[in-house]
Length: 478
Ligand code: FRU
Picture (cartoon, helix red, strand yellow):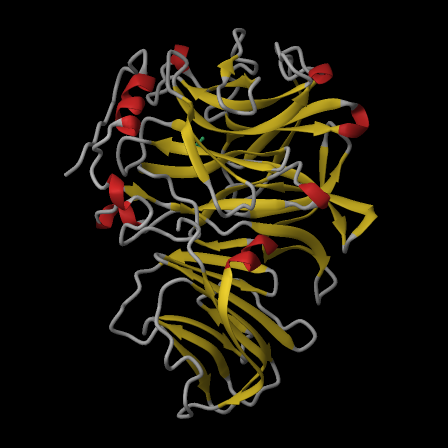
């Protein structure tokens, strides 16, 4: 069904033409239903067509959020890695553009990052005062032949990301170790130089520095136990104090180390800690978001709608803001909150204050029909009930158990903060995401229209909610 083009083996010279054919063809199957297909997420980013994986090159310029991502425009499986490209002014209403990087003689375009480079900080041939620079892995051949091992390359844009030119002197970092991929570049202001974090192999990562984004020197190696792929590295104030900061190094599974960084070397103080749970993977953050925000977007793998017939596959997570906080045990931990822009999408809010609810009473959500919604609850941990939470579509439970202070449906340790549990649940067409006191879990679901959309759960006594709210979330595509 439909047009699928899979290109394997030797990479043809110009896949760009093939993509244009798919994209501008007046008659690609289902085009008139674009964004209202049955399994289409309504407030999460998906590509129009094809497969997506890792977010790449998250960069903010002049009011526009850029999201690049691993893209196979031709069908719903992983292959033919391109860099897709979308932009938004609010992190939710995305406009998908033509792909930014295409496989060519350099190989497949694997994951990487982006930055805004002022002309004075780079030897790349920028025309204006600054340009968007992408750093990516060129993976010459998936069979890892000796002469086509993965290397790191750069490309630049002189037109705000409309088109990219690959640097003529690529690669900028030669092959070093087996895997070698996913360069994360960022400006290190105190020393006036660029840094690159790079995945090597096993649990190993490296740090490089550069005066110009072209000449790179290795300055450090570090490990994140249990991690692989897709490094991110960033600085956060401790409990909001800009005079006391720590650096985080992060890998694809959402495990991270906390420590100090002097512009060349990372020194771990604690970790690995785990932030992500469920199907989120390979997240990245914006280095230059306004107001000092650390906005992060991940990819949700495993269980996407492509295998159920959708002409697109897999989605990004909700954008979330990170901070670094001292937890109840006095330890520093990452804390995630849904990015505030989601509030603009809320409608038809219903709320209850000081709700005491016991099994058998009328359910507050009795009349609610599924779709796209957010539930925001503050649960009193001293409620008589032994288990408190929600049941969604008759099968997806998100329930806190008092005995071991753990959640079903939201992994990780979940002790109350000041006696309360803040639970935020986001449901979109095929996804369920749960924020509990700063942690994040996600997974794909299928909504069962025959089952009640939402039921409150209270076992072994009454549940007390300081507050309980439901918001419908409006579609960003309509
Ligand atoms: C992570 C990853 C990256 C790689 C990319 C290829 O999901 O394996 O390490 O660059 O996907 O698509």
